[in-house]
Image (cartoon, rainbow, N blue to C red; front, top):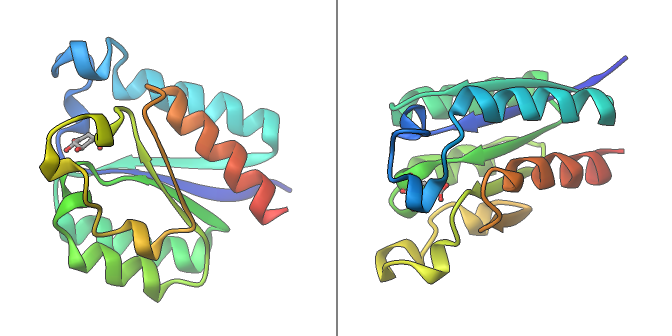
Amino acid sequence: MSKTVFVLNGPNLNMLGKREPGIYGGKTLKDIENDCVAMGRDLGLAVDFRQSNHEGVLVDWLHEAGENAVGVAINAGAYTHTSLALHDAIRAIPIPVIEVHISNVHAREAFRHHSMIAPACKGVICGFGPTSYVLALHALKSITD
Ligand code: DQA
C-alpha cells in the first residue's frame, strides 16, 4: 500500500505559468501536480497536492498531514519569510517537512534570504525550478522508508 505525502503550496502559486515566467518558468501548478503524482507513483507514494492563498488553511492542512501522511513538501511562497504560525505548525506535527522553492531564494532580494520555517523543517530544496518538487519527493521517500 502506498504511503501518503502532502505537497502543499502557498500564496500566488496558483498563478504559475502566468506569474513572472522569467523567474518561475512556464509550467502551471497543474503541470507540477501531474509531475508529482507521476513521480509519486514511481516511488510508491500517494501524493495529495493542494494550494491555498490563506495562511490558516495551510496551518490546518499541516495538522491534517500530521494525522494522515508520512511527510510533507511545502512551498509556502511568501509565507516562508513571514509566518511564525507555519513554523509552529511544522513543529507541532510528528512527520518530516521539507521546504521547497522553485527559485533560488538566496540569489534574489535580501528579504527572501530568511526563512521562518526552515529551522522547523527537515531540509530545504530550492532553485531547481519545478524539479525542486520532484527532488523533495525523492527526499521524502528516502527519509520515510
Ligand atoms: C517561492 C519563493 C518565494 O520567495 C516567493 O514569495 C514565492 C515563490 C519559490 O517557489 O521560488 O511565492 O517560494
